[in-house]
Image (cartoon, rainbow, N blue to C red; front, side, top):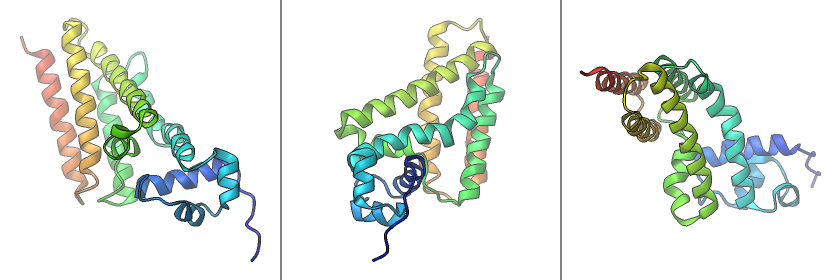
Length: 197
């Protein structure tokens, strides 16, 4: 049998991320990962120590490749709900390009599949959701700084819940316009809430 070519750790992580994102953690055997990454078991264990460690490494790579390019704008000092709307649009467009129904969000998927039974994955999910909440809170503060802080914090939390629900819905629908309209309507509800007398 010909020897498989050496693969960099980053390339290996990228290929593993694609596989886990589409198939989940529990449905992915080591044989599946060997096949989808083109690496040997020895290479996988050498780079990560095992399947679980490889999965955890994919979380940071997911932030780098998928989350940050769309969400960093929400974290800018002058961000408002306009940047939140742009974040949703970028990710919905990406989902359409991949093909709907699609893989959803790696983190939202892992929140239901793995996190309830695994403290390390739970921590990764919490860190992601905390990042989203802080970004949304930043945008809300800039949008309407005179709203009581506890109100804005509650709305930022609601935006996190909505976001996770939106990406989960993208695993079930072929209709990108439905996702787009849902995001627009939800943001309009938030705007109405913070501008009400």
